[in-house]
Length: 65
Image (cartoon, rainbow, N blue to C red):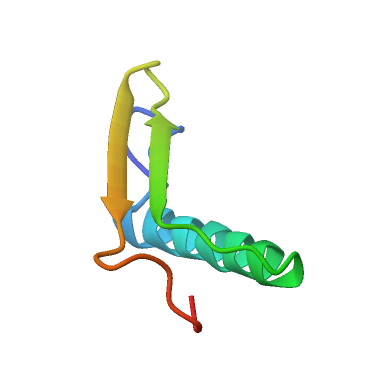
């Protein structure tokens, strides 16, 4: 991390952290034999601003999701 803000995360590190969370969520859902059709995420930045994203699987959950 560099710059004036020590809370700044490099884009690659942020992407890796989010991917890790998504994999963990998928593992938990599969362990419970549950599936999801949609995902909603809110990321709170260091300055307390928020970014909201959502995705829906076209056609619903699949056997490998």
